[in-house]
Image (cartoon, rainbow, N blue to C red; front, side, top):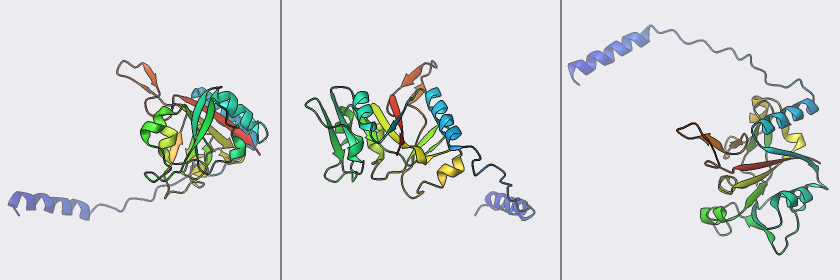
Length: 214
């Protein structure tokens, strides 16, 4: 070791020797909501609309018809293999769904090129944080793998009403940290070098959110 390097390391050791142990930070942020479920739900709707998402409120008896309306007459769309089939409309000659196995690259999983050719994707969600207007996907069977929610240009996301919470700590307690976590706050949007809004670069340019009462 050169004299210069030894001198530098020696000075670092001397500086660290007298450095006090940093104090434990005080965590005084809120971890539990005190708002009513209705107030939290309204907050989420307000945030999502502000982010230019389309928000609808449906029940288990009306959700399939709403999805049919959002898909349009002619559509090929993908769903994860665990999505409740009672939530989606019946296939027709011009509209049909494709099931993704979720086991990429195994048989039954769609390639990125195949995903790019579909019109939309329909999934459920794990939890939604009203404070930030963020929907969390956690790679469950009802949500599928990450690729199916990022490649298609239109995402219809079902948010069970009971999964809406107000605060980030509440949301984080509901996700599995060992699974992929995708956080969605509105449709994909960014700004180019001239500060012009560009949509659909990093994900779907259209986000339809269905708050489902069941």
